Length: 147
Image 1 (tube, rainbow, N blue to C red):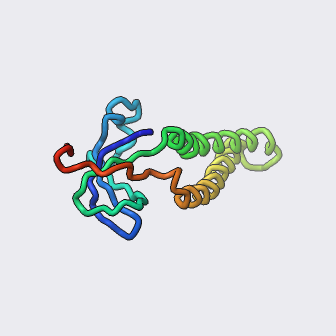
Image 2: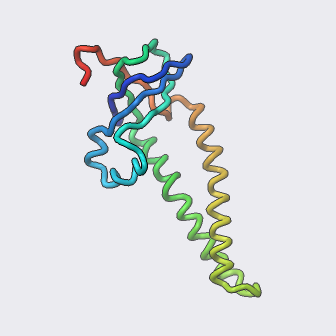
Image 3: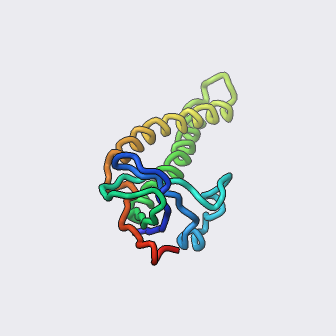
């Protein structure tokens, strides 16, 4: 389980918004420069919880490592794979078209990329409704122990 400390920014029914700083996992990650492009050192995360929390409390949130790997695969690898497969198929299966093969494979590859986006969006909505696959509040950190 990947764990990070954050501060509760907002409380809404059974959801809280937690402000996270770059954690210790970020320091050792090879993609640390890519993950937070255009952002400062902090980010906001919505987390479902049954724990009664107040704004300003420090909490520990966690996400299962396996889920993080699956999500990374789906978000990064699947669209690129789709682009390559559709482009290659178009290049070799559509030589009869009167337009240039490279242009046809590029256009169809982009179409494949777009059509990968639609199922990923549906999957994202389904995953958000499943609480065990989303980040969750593990515990409240007592004020004397926080940062």
